[in-house]
Length: 195
Image 1 (cartoon, rainbow, N blue to C red):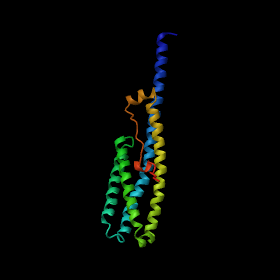
Image 2 (image 1 turned 180 degrees about the horizontal axis):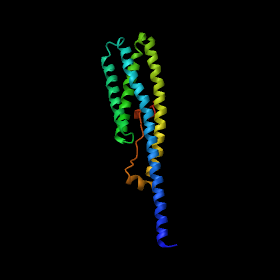
Image 3 (image 1 turned 45 degrees about the vertical axis):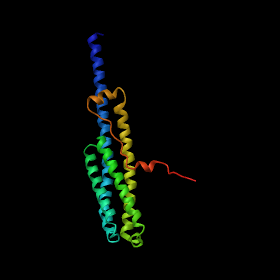
Image 4 (image 1 turned 120 degrees about the vertical axis):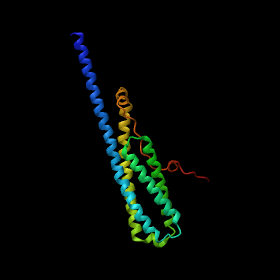
């Protein structure tokens, strides 16, 4: 075999490897985008329920205006965060911002539900009970979709960061994606018990 044939075979193998790696990177990136689209559907459903919840609560909580306004502001911030993250789910800063906005919304809703406990008529209201049930169901769907998204991000990141794939990934601008963390960090810390 001549040197030219050997060089051509080596170049063909390298080109085939490059095409295979590039196509796999595109496939994994699209799985990340699809995973985020599932989260987006569930979060949008949640955001659509919140104004109904606030309207139901308003009649009972006339003196709790600050709490209701905090829920609406947190919802609006989360909607904005979702829109920014939906443009590019691999954008790490947009994903972190969405996580912070979602944590703020969860905190505001938690305060609203805690406050609702002191209004017996509100606790017994059928609309309130139905909205709480729908929000709980949606939260479960968000958690499931987030887990699927984070799994897709992990597979994508592993492939992007693995050698020699990272050489091609960096050359074509494939960046490591960010996991979506929604829970507030203080929820992960074990409770302090003192005797």
